[in-house]
Amino acid sequence: MKPKRSRGTNALDLLLALRDNTNVIWSGRHRPALDDLPVPPRPQQEKLPLWLGVGGTPASIERAARLGLPMTLGLIGGDIRCARTLTEHYRTLGQAAGHAPEALRLAATSHFYVGATSQGARKDLYPYYREYLRPKTAGGRGWLVGPDQFEAVSGRFGALMTGSPQEVIDKILTEHELLGLNRFMGQIDFGGMPAAMVNASIELLATEVAPRHSQGTRPDRAPGRMNGPGALPRAPSPYPPQPMPIQHLICPREYDAMTTHADPSYVDPAMINPRAQRLVEAFKQALIRLRDEEGLTFDDIKTLTDLLQRVQTATGAHLSLVAMPLYSELFQGGQGGYTPSDDVESPTYFPGSPRIDNPGTLPMRADEPGTPLIASGRILDGHGNPLPGARLEIYHAADNGNYSGLYDDGVPEDNLRGHLFTDADGRYAFTTITPAAYADPVTLAVDGVAEAAAAIGRSSYRPAHIHYEVHHPDLIKPWRGEIYFTGDPGRLRRTEHRPARPAGRLRPARRPRRHSRPRLQRPLPDHKVRLHPQQGALGS
Image 1 (cartoon, rainbow, N blue to C red):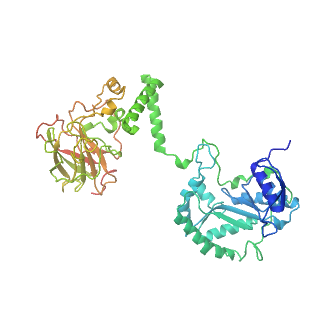
Image 2 (image 1 turned 45 degrees about the vertical axis):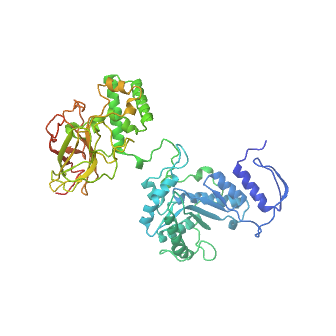
Image 3 (image 1 turned 90 degrees about the vertical axis):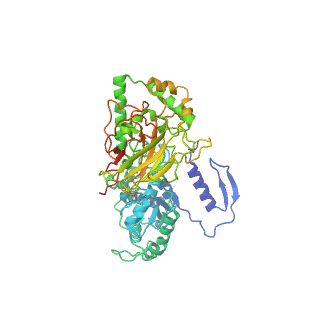
């Protein structure tokens, strides 16, 4: 039986047969045999030039040498000095097979990007080079390139051809001297690089690199060329002129500047987020305490996640909002009459609310049901100073628990929505109606929701609240939160163990006085809101 041959080897054999014969007799494993088949028209040259591309494996190099074909070596990563062993191996084997030295031509190809400056080229190229080489599937081909690896591979002896025009010229000439190249080819467009970058690199190649490279100009070298008369001499080889064992093809350890990680469990250190690690570890430790102290089981977790999945399927809401009742003391508890600022914008918010006076009245229907309410307060910066001219967005549910603009109920979209600007002392005041507690009817209809809430002693209704958003040029980001009513029986009580308040959160200047639900025309106590210096205004 004949040994199995790869599809690539079969294709190469067929291509050589088509090139070298006017009539082809050939048989292979992957297509029907050819029996004295003529191949017109013939190429103009006596022999059509063919170059065999190799990735550095000994078998590919030995095949090119045995056939006497010019070889193109793909330099994807690592140190180009490693490739010298491969090129010497190719020449030695080729001459031993009876091929003339001038027939054993060599080319190298690598990723190519030239910029106006060395650092600018590296900065622009890195994200696209990283994207191009990263594995696209779990355990797939490729590797992750971190900043240190990128610096190594783009350095003087690195395989990545990038930098300023003169730096690229120097690297091409260095490759020629080390490897004895007859040709260099650069891959210019890769990794989703924008067309503007590709065009700019091509222009610099045509106007700066190619003209100066054709003269071999380098500050520390005499003029020379890679091919033809005046070509730069190849450096003498330190290797013996006989075929080398396979083990000699391994790159020396000191030149291993860039490592290929085929292990799918490898994680690029540049992608590690220390804060995420701490949060996951803290969460795991909390689960361990629940297991050891409260007897938490996997069935308990499965029961909870099954319920959350049913609610998410029914409502279409993001899972973080579906699970909000589980951690509402942290972000939605209304402790001290307010909610810490959150980056998550409420799904009940709509931009473009109408401006009202300060003091003013939120837009509402003429016969708006509910108890009238006057709310007033003061916005302070991180140092306790008034924050004048702050834009305060205000919106809340109606007396029936519905938000305007969410339902086709005939209620104007701007009902109980508006914004105002604080005065010179950071104060604001507006009139509205008292919002009501509410629950999502779709969520309540999900089997097991009401029972689960009752099992942990909670109502399925969200306590009454007013949404606030504070915008100001001196703020790093807007503050978003809710104002609750102290004394509301639906409000969540302060728990025995409460985590420390994190930096960068919004907190009241002082705890407001406790008060019952406001009655007719009874104003809310003055609400002072102070922004922590890490989040709020940093000026005096």
